[in-house]
Figure 1 (tube, rainbow, N blue to C red):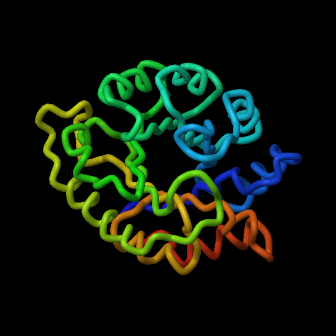
Figure 2: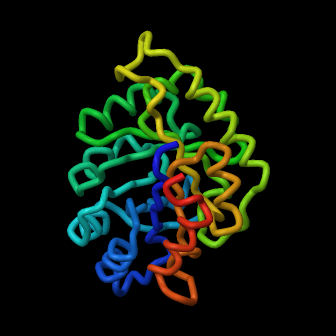
Length: 232
């Protein structure tokens, strides 16, 4: 298994000190910075846009992982890519022409991902899985930080791992179609991390578990990595 990557979500950071919060995560050992974008339509919350994403990009040298929880994401792909997003994920549930949107993300210069709500089976994207760089398994219902982890999501991660492992190179966008990375997002902490990693997750998004830790961001990231098995 490849090294587990920790991606602190700025959704739980202090936005009044955003650059400092991003730097704390980077200095504390984070691998990516996760940016949650919500529109108040697809999910019941409104967060940030390309301008704040640019501020995150300017504050760190780490990959910036943008998760678009919005309707009509194709309208904003170029704006987020121009703002410095390295990875852009859209939701299967709002993209009737998903293949076209993934091509748009690549044309904009970012790596492409698809996120799935808890009620959406991973099998729903079987026909597009070979095109993905990143598969985001939501382990809470998207919209707010600090929610309780949905335990049966572990089986979904395992099914995703098995589907990806079974992909061949024939007809794939990349030479190795099985290189799609699995990310889990929602309720990830030291108690839930071991299960999702064992099931096949490689990127752990954590918001309140990192920015709400009593001993600080660095201690939170170290604790989460240790729980996930470190280098494994």
